[in-house]
Length: 495
Image (cartoon, rainbow, N blue to C red; front, side):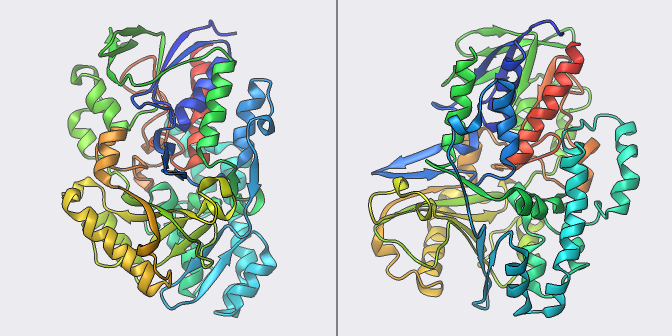
């Protein structure tokens, strides 16, 4: 057994909470330092006039990854969370007025797809078989929680990855099976959920359709913050400590090893330091350059970061039946719009939207008869140089006009009870995200697996990373897997 250590975790997002629970379950003494008033990170709650909003993640996939954390502590997830299976997962509206209800039922999907292409419908099973092969490698055989920190591990996966077409761009992978633009979108958009560009994110992420099909898409009663509260409760029950309103200002490094952290209030000694903070913030702001041989300032500037988003939180005095729990409303452009966001870093006139209406499943999220709704619009990160103090209002009005006049949400603006807008600049200020990105390092081929920031720091002994920017990546299941991976690395190092 490893010696029990004093551990400090920077940040109480899903990654920090999940790893802190795992380490506490192993008998270590763990303290979480959180800059904000509450735990949660990007899953922070917003409450206004009886309306409750999930500010970030809105759905749960792979609930077994959550169950595992509770089981390690000798608990059962159902005693802490009430999950509800969603069916369909999403309703996807296309620019021509057609829509598809995306679900796990193969017969329903083939029937809907056949309206637009019988040939595509006939290829559904073949695509899902290919997605399953990727799922088996990543989840079933544990590649998603295998640390890719040496070339031996990378080379051992490459032959199989090539056979599975795992290194193709996700959109190209979908195009091998489907011809209709609707189906190519439905089965290639998932990288956007983790901050990736479907036209260059590797097809290894195409395991997500099978993950959803076999594991479902779930909603947690009370919203996603109920998961934060459940993990916080479990951590405290195990004897862990959470200190809020105390941002870390420096990771203390002595003779090449992390020895603790410094805040404005005091120093916290630790034998193990874990950062769940933004990757560039961790290395660029918290570790002096003298201690960084690999992640120099110059190299940090070369890291490609994912997109950002504008989020509009709406408390509405009525409900709109055309909205399901999760709804996507798409522009006529796909590749061009993605290119504007990721490469040109402009704010185009058209946009696609993701709408989350938890009141479809949970009446407690709004006053009786009212709607709690958030609208997410993907936009470029702050490297585009936009002034969001000037852009936020006109973009918000543009979106509201589109929903009211073109999408058919009648009298939308007249029924707004509460409205809050969150921009890339807010991500930078409130989450220490250098470029205002909620998803960290972009998941492209040259920033995946061994090319991604490692779970163990390459520069500072005793420092570890967890969260969206390390292996395997972003999204709630991805972040939970980073916690499992980093936990295993720490356990191996201590042993």
